[in-house]
Each structure stands twice: as C-alpha cells, then as structure tokens.
Amino acid sequence: MPNINYLLPQAFTPSDCSGITNPTELEAMLKYALSRYKLHIERTYKSQVAWAALLLPPFLNEPADAPTLTMAQRIIEKRELMPHYQPFGEKHYEPGQPQDDIHEIRDTILIDAQPLFTYSCADRVEQQVTHHGLDISGGAECIYQHQQSSFPVGAYGITIPPYNQDISQAAMRSFMQTPIQTNHWIMFIPTTGFSLKSQLIFSHPNSGFKEVFNHYGLATPHLSPGTYLPYDIVAIGDTLIPEEIPGTHITSSSTSESCVFVTENTGSTSHST
Image (cartoon, rainbow, N blue to C red; front, side):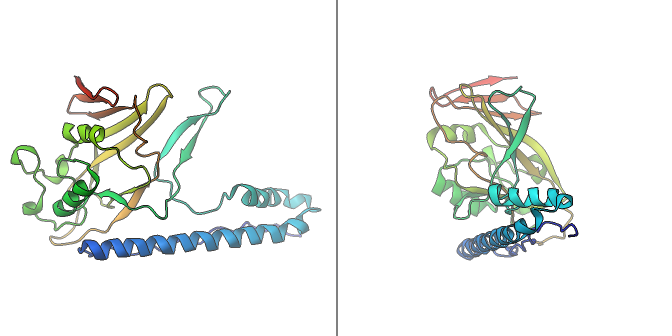
C-alpha cells in the first residue's frame, strides 16, 4: 500500500469586521465569527478522527507506512491537528527534567469569551474601561481615521501620537483595584508600523509563574487618510493575564522609563531604574 499523507485541517476564513463602527453591530459580528470558528473546529476534528480511524486497520501490516500510522494514532489520542490559535507561549519546565529541557505551552481559543477591552477609538476604549475597570493611558486606536486630530489624549491633556503609546502607572494600580477576568480576549490590528514600546510582566514569585505581555505603540501605518484598519485577534486565553491572587507581582517596563513594581497583597508601589 502506498504512503498516504495525513489529513490537514482546512484553512479558516475569518470574518471581515473592518469598517464596522457601531459597537453593537461589531459585538454581534464577532459573536457570529466565533460561532463559525467553533463549528469549523468541530467539523475539522470529526473529519480528522474519522480519517485516522479508517486508516488504522490497513496500516497494521504495512511497516512502510508506520510513520503515518503513528501520526494517525496521535491524532486520535491528542487531537494534535485540531485548529487553535497560538498567539503567545510560555516556557514550561517538566517535573523532574533539567531546567533547559523546556517546551512551549500555548493558548487555545476560547469560543464563548466576551471582550475584556480592545485597542480601539477613544470612545470605545472608555466604554471598556467603564465596564471592566481597566485604566489605560488613552490606548492605541484600532479602528480610527488616520488623522492627527483623532490621536488619543493622555495624561495632562497631552496628545499621544501613535508612535508614543505607553501604559501608565494608573493602569498598573487598576489591576490592584479590580480583578481582571482571565477568559477574555484582547484585539490588536495588523499594520506595517507596529513597534514594541514596553512590556507588562506578570509573575508569581512563589510558584515561579511568569507571563510577559508586549505592549505595542501603533506607528503611522502606510494607509491613506480616512482608511479603516481591520481587527485581528492575536491574544487569547488565561495565560496572557493570570488570575490575580495574593502575592502576584506585576511589572511595567520600558526602555525609556523606570520600572514600576506592584505587589497585590500590600498594594505598594515602588520605582526602579
């Protein structure tokens, strides 16, 4: 029997949410898109399992096709080809293994999650802040008209150009005041002008847990004035922003500013250069 390639999942066609400015319509569209993705996952997995189960008997006596048989077994046992988002990964140490023997654990898309906040226009960011208690310094606009007059305003009324976004100390304190739910997604936009500005580092000293969230400033994209930018979900799951429990240590770092350390159980804030 000739070798047969294993079944790959078909590509998922995302919904186009660009140009949707009404928050209610956008929320409905995103729910619809996630429902489509859930159905896509279910159909893909069922077809893969059926394919693998069908091929198992013929391969039992075919040594030449042992690799394909092994892969089919892994599909059934571990669902390896089940499509999922892998935006961020954390290094995980296996018990009893040397510390340099590590692998990546990645997030799986959460189908029923509601938005925590989005980098969007100032009004929408304000709505998310009001509903979820997250305070950010204006936020990089996601669906915005590419005009200087629409740039967000930060502390002291200073206009924040897209290449100078940052997260303020007030944002860090808000993590202390209001626990952040972990089953939510965060959306960015694809653009030719992203530049890394700072990081949010979440760690738990007792367990050794550490997660880094890169905060990007939105540099001027190569688009015409008035062009709307599409949403792109790039961060999903409960390892991006860990559950807030006593002892959690949160750090805001930037190449141009001092670090800000906040410890949840004391509520203290200190500075370090």
